[in-house]
Amino acid sequence: MNCLRCNGLVVNDDSFAVQTGSSSDFHGWRCVNCGMIVDDVIRDNRRVSSQTRRATHPEHRRYGGQAA
Image (tube, rainbow, N blue to C red):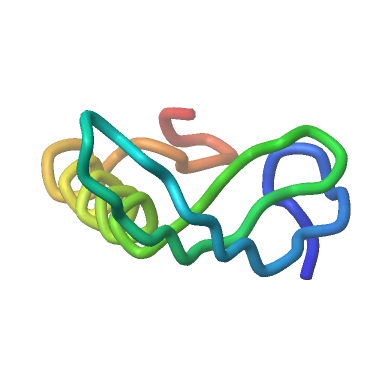
């Protein structure tokens, strides 16, 4: 899998983080090159954000004789 930011190698990242005395597991993807991290929450938020932008700005990203 390739990174969306830098096109680098993305690997499965299962980490264990200790935050304020409680432990939590992290399961996601991390780019070896630039360090970008994507997990389920980030992916879902990006999906919702892109759907909202398309709904509020349907003319956005048209090319040719139309608005760009």
